[in-house]
Length: 140
Image 1 (cartoon, rainbow, N blue to C red):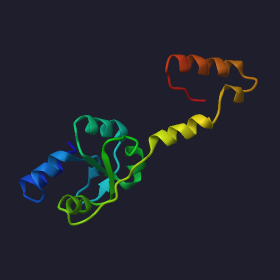
Image 2: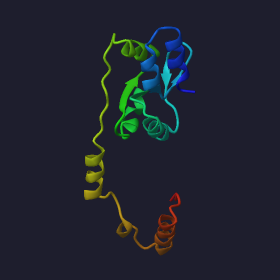
Image 3: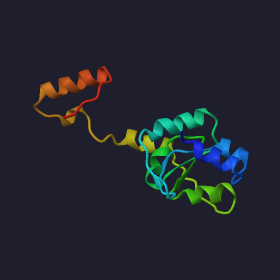
């Protein structure tokens, strides 16, 4: 689905074949060349890494989310021409790199809230404990 445009460009001779198989567009490309965000980006970025892709192109608003996945290049774009020019070496794109170790370390050192913040509602605490043990989602 997402590889179709790169395969098409490769067959038309617009980009080299090795670029078509090394990169993946994880965005919706609208008629006219505009790039739009997609759902389930993180899961698709992880799958792209598992498939051995060198890099992915995502909508610029989703670049921070996709950059959580390590060992794959992540580029934020707005138009399909940016991708085409990059793959042909006519333009540079800035790779987004996110240091997930420091991100998670900061969260561990200063946890936002804990069970001590729930006051006088034992039923709510009990419901959250059960949900956490069963790995269920909760809405308060």
